[in-house]
Image (cartoon, rainbow, N blue to C red):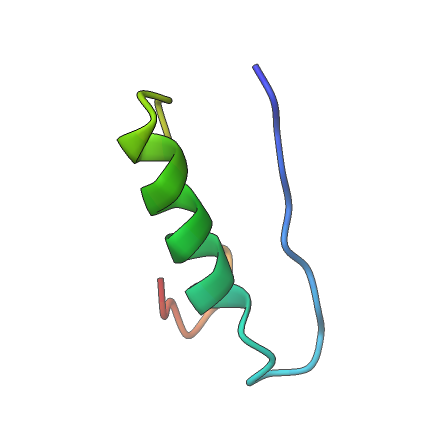
Length: 44
C-alpha cells in the first residue's frame, strides 16, 4: 500500500484539483483509491 500526501498551508494552490485528478486517473487504471480530507473547510 502506498500513501501519498498533498500538503500546503496556503489556500488556492490547486491541491484539491490535483489530488482529485490524480485519483481519477489511478482509479481508471484499476487502482483502489481512498481520499481523506483533513481540511476544516472540507472542499474534497
